[in-house]
Amino acid sequence: MKHKKGILALMMFISILISAVFLTTLHAQTQIRDLFRLNKELQEEGYFMANFEFKMMGMVYWLDHGHYFMALTRLDKLHEQLKTREGLIKVPKFINKEAELDFYLNLQNSRTGAFMDDSYPYCTYNEPTENILSHLNALAEETGQPLHLKYPLKYLDEINTPEKLKTFLDDVSNVGWIASNFPQTTFVFARSLLSYYNGEGVIGKHNLYNFSLEWKQALLQWFYTNQDPQMGFWGPRSRASGQLLKKDLNNTASIIKTFVDKSGNDIYTSLPLRYKREIFKTALEVMSEPMPSGKDLDEWHEWSLKMGKGTTMLTRYLWKNASQNDKAEAKVLIENFVRTTFERYYLPDKGAFSYYPNSTQATLDGTGGTINQFTDLGFYSAKKQNELWGNLDKKIVDLGANNVSTLTDRDLGLITNHPEINSLRFYVTIPDIGNLTSGVYGVAYPQKTPVRDVMDFTPKVIHWLDTTSQSMGNWVSKQAIIQSMNALEIEEVLVYEDGIPLEALNDFLQENNKLVVLGFDVMQIPRYKIVYILNG
Image (tube, rainbow, N blue to C red; front, side, top):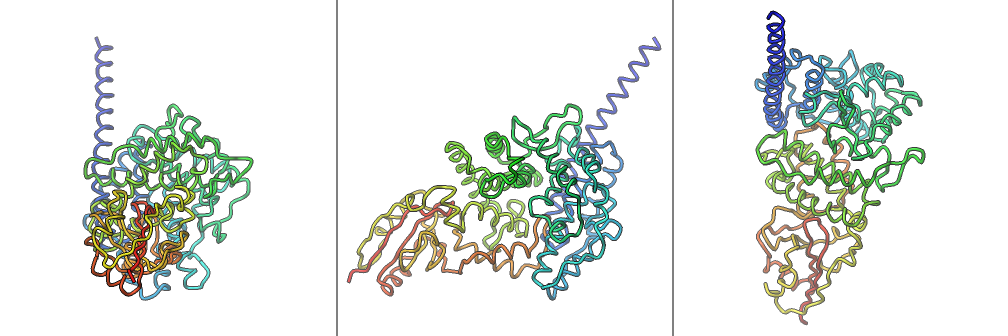
């Protein structure tokens, strides 16, 4: 009888323990959703929030390692801080770049050298440090001074041998049941170390910390070995079974650039990228998943990340070896992503993009990420469009030359009546097919559409960057976006929002005797061309 009571008590204890763990996870997930909402608000209000997502991941690490009290206490503390704004840093309006450089240099932790609160787990230190160092590097280049930190990057001493490195990589990559229930896992902190290899990191570039050749080879080999052959992906593995837990597109998209260049060529002959077809297929599966149905910002955050990174991965690194069927399927998904980006993230009154859907404020993360994706899609390059979608010369339907005395709706209907046309660009002469952003007189939209032409939104983005007080997002800096935008030669042109400007076009025709019109689809691909010549 006593034995039965003992078993019953044990079963009750286990049930209570399981329930407590379940409720703990549920509570954490609820608070995390609200913290993402607060992060959005604070970014829009100009607070420094560059390490927010890494703090969140640090608490997931604690939860997954059984430090429930530590994680939930810190979660409550962070939630209260973000609600009250107490102790948060508001980014000032800088009088010059030198002042901005000093501001960010002063954020470095004197004990660790990391740009991260050292009361959070060690695994969180490197990623925010890399992000801020990237911004500091851009500022240092603009001010013409070398990048000197206030303190050495001592935190890297913890992983500076191949043995220490492998222990760290295994720790953050093998996760338990709790971590598997969150959109992102601590595997991101393993992936972030690859910046020493793929040319994105500032630490190696400026010799801010030196690792041995053996260390670098151990890092590369660990990732090469840990690619999943069925999916082709990298990602977190179950601590219990060793199996891949999820189709981690976000981290796979970052890892792949270590093994192939932007043209899809292998970087290391001894370690060529494997399972290319499997990667492409798995990416299509993930990107085909439906958009979030609710308003949870963490779900939308995850969706926009996987779509953006998936688009970049496919078009930069895998397109060369993909089948025509896979390319066609990807193009449909990408077109829908472009439409959604403009519908939910573009703010016409700001002329820039938000990081969260249906927001009222544009952000650096939203704008910088979107411009990078559009660049990868060939929005600004005929060469890139040819690589992705085929020869543009063969895709443009030439509607011929039309002699007119006065331009009418019927005349323009020859090009505007094609449903795939999203925008029209007007030229004086037939433009060079390799440079369709030059010599543009104006832009118009034949039908109501959320998708803007590059000649419309790009100058507005540049203006927003020139006027915003934001300087650093969670993932990208203002200076880095400005540097990438400076490479684009897009001049501001007339934009006609409300249909076809017949009167203005007739005035243009009378003055120049010719009007060339090109029709573009939502991917900024030229589809139709027509020339109107004024009757002599």
